[in-house]
Length: 339
Image 1: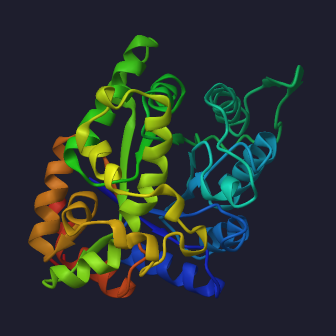
Image 2: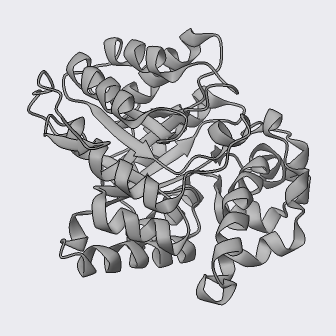
């Protein structure tokens, strides 16, 4: 299993770089950040700084979207960063949640999303594309190392897009039962499209808190299932809940969607998190002492996960990265602790 971390593009900008460096020192493979340009700072300069101040860490957006940013611009930006980072970029992309909603727009329609993903995957890797009826190519984008594109989603239609066009799928939760269902949906779509389903990478993302104090850990992460609920409400509005795993849909039946406040998006103590039970926190995140993290990560690995990506939006960020580097990453890689 590989390990990633997602850091908010919050001021001061130095903080993101410092945490990316610490992640690299503790054996992490990937460093991600959000792309929501109103709620947080612009991520591209921060990714540039991260690329120039790390050596091994792969870097990407978790996630961008083809609505707030014109897709050819995003493809060009990633191709440029691929050059700056010496081939370490990865694109995570979705239909758009916070970045779109806070400026009064809805997530991009699925058909438009798929077309943009197909085009961007080729264009940012230097291949010719047709866009808006025009042939274009980034002639200078010839790094020689492919930039992979991972699609984020929960619903069947977006998961089919991931299977048809993407190099991987991003799943924002750590419930092995739901992850297994999503992986099955993506791999089935890949097979139907004539692709090798085993070649698609699977990233699971959620907060992690290493502590014996379960009550405090739940308070650290209660915002996260509330954030996921926004996506689940969208999925339920377009699909029969009977076609979705109950573990994904049942908890939102006890929630009010209009209580979600984007001003507290991904923030510890967000008021909308009050609707979330401890049981849901434990299912959707990874909490407890190091042994509990190792046990759940092995279950996620059995469900098909290739990369575990920590949403580092809790207290004790340095301690989380160091605990993983000392106790958890070595255990999942069969190494002696500290070696």
